[in-house]
Amino acid sequence: MNQDIVFIDDLRIQTVIGIFDWEREITQTVGLDLEMAFDIRRAAETDHIEDTLNYKAVAKRLIAFVEGSEFQLVEALAEHCARIVLEEFPVTRVKLKLSKPGAVRGSSAVGVIIERERPNP
Image (cartoon, rainbow, N blue to C red; front, side, top):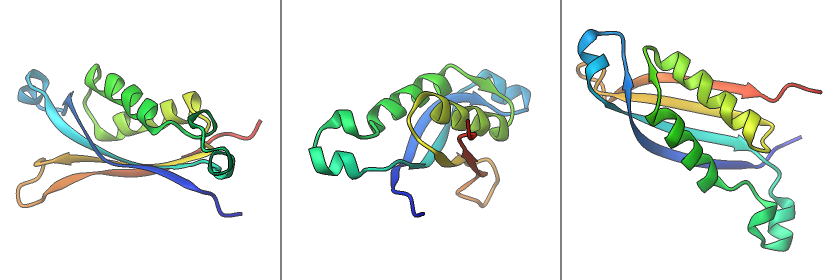
């Protein structure tokens, strides 16, 4: 069955990220793109915010988490962000792209794309 997608593109957040000593002393920008599987039909019928996935709440939660984190690897940060979305919001699946701009000379960004699903009960 096809699932509806609620998305957030290019959510930019300042955080401590990286393995080098100099990276541990500064903040850098990371970008998050999220695709969250959520059935929007009820919200479409009622036109009420209570019946949808509140993407502002998702963004605020991830901003607070990422700003307070100090991961070395983008892989670890991405995994923790995906876990937060699945555990704290009513989504069945999340596809998350985490970009670290300027990490490699000549590239606009590097990072990871992961997809995670809520475990079946």
